[in-house]
Length: 205
Image (tube, rainbow, N blue to C red; front, side):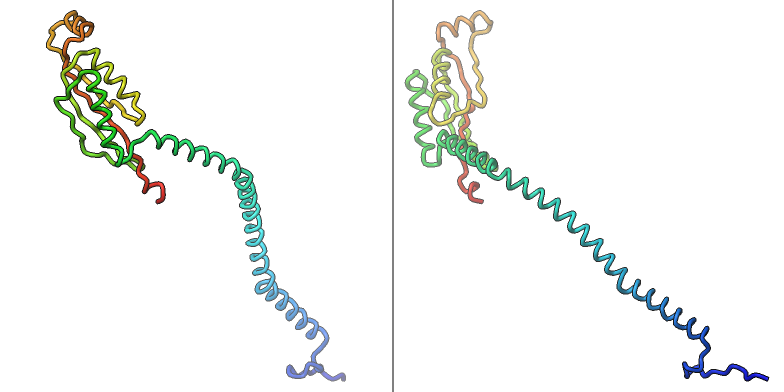
C-alpha cells in the first residue's frame, strides 16, 4: 500500500508539481497585471499627452512661421500708417496755434466785409484720439460774401470743418431770395465750425 502525498505549505519542496505550476502562473499573471496598471497605463497616458502637445506645438510653430513671414510686410504697413498719421497731424492745429487759427478766421471774414454778431468757441468734445474744438458764429452779410468766406475757411492750412450752416432772409418768396443772392443783399448766417486737436498723450499710452 503506497504512501499518501503529503506537503507542508511552508515547504515549497514538498509541493506537488501541479501546485507549483499553478502558483507560478498566478504570480506571473498578477505581476503582469500590476505592471500594466502601474507602469504601462500611466506611460501610455503620458505618451498620448505628449502626442497631443506635439501636434499643438507643430500648429503653433506653423502659426509663428507665418507670422514671422508677414512681419516684414506688417512693419512696412505700420511705417506707412505712422507717416500718414504724422502728415495728417500737420494739418491739425495745436492748443498753442488755436488763437492763431481763430485770428485767421477773423481775417477771412474782414476780407469779405463780414462782421460777426456772434463768435464763440463752444465746449470741447473729447474722443479717444483727438479733441473737437467747436466754434459757433453768426453774421449778417451778403450771400456772395458768405460764400467766399466759407470757401476761404475750408481752404485754410489748418483743417476747419463746416459742421452745419444755415441762411435766413427777410425776403418772403423764392424769387426775392434768388434776387437777394444775385445782388449780394444781406442774409443772416448761422454756422457751426469744427477743428480738431490730436491728443499727443494717447500716442504714448
